[in-house]
Length: 130
Ligand code: THU
Image 1 (tube, rainbow, N blue to C red):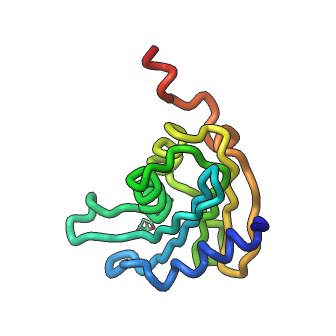
Image 2 (cartoon, rainbow, N blue to C red):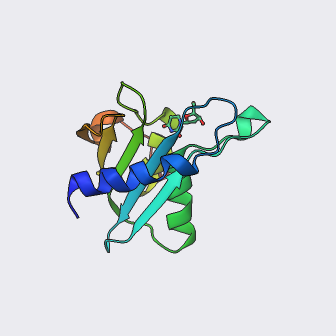
């Protein structure tokens, strides 16, 4: 699958986003080491602190299905600006895949590519606990 195709998978999730509070849809597509793609969207809640981001939705779907190794993540929004992954999502992803490639998309379907290490230098991960 090309990078653009993974980005397009993330775009298909925008319509699934449950966003009655922010009205800000986010879609994600997380590619496991075996090529399986786990999708996600943001799911909000009346208790705002209980909202979950699209990337973490995809990650917990994957881990709960037994997948713990990942190659690429696409995360997209519908706005003019690139939809950067929040700090909590970077931290959750770092646990499993510090070298993850991250494709960050915006509403016109353009994307930029980074590694998670670039987005989160000196991250705290499992090795820190000895
Ligand atoms: N959001 C994500 O889904 N991923 C991010 O990395 C940034 C923020 C969602 C959470 C909330 O539903 C909405 O965007 C506005 O913050």
